[in-house]
Length: 238
View 1 (cartoon, rainbow, N blue to C red):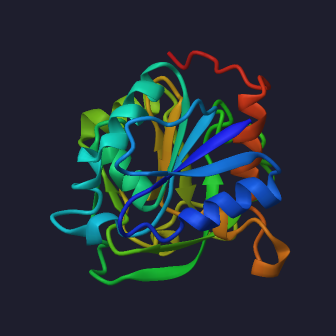
View 2: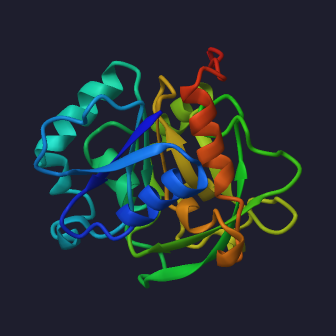
């Protein structure tokens, strides 16, 4: 299994993603510079967190014009698995690969803290290995992490089983106090209608090893790796 980790000017979680894929998940992972027009024959793509192009204009708004995004779009169109984390989620939304948009946190402040997210659907190559008996503890670190979408888009997301994660409290309830950024309906991550492209604001790569005090993020990467190896078949949601 080979994984491409995108690298833009301003990416700061790219090495973390490579480390997790190589040293925790035990698969081949390599960086792909934003000026490259090829991914190099990979099985999955990770768009990592950071501040691509300094978040000028809007978070992710410039990165979508990088040559590598053409290759990512082609890969996704062919059914390849693509996961965007934090800034990567923002880039995928800006590129139209995911529905909705990311705007400034409702608090108008940068938020860096552990959060709890509950998987909303196991019908995804990014979640199907997730335990259902408790939320996952995974940190966030963002300024523009508030997910928004038009009412008709939200209806489509629900209809086609595209809401993958929501922020919850210790009891698994989607309450306002559990929402770190004001995202509509506590949404922490979504996928495209086909199910092969997903994004989330929390950083699972920062929650994969005991030394970090959090290991629940590993569930997402375990799902991804198992899906690449043929262990997942998505059911039609509608």
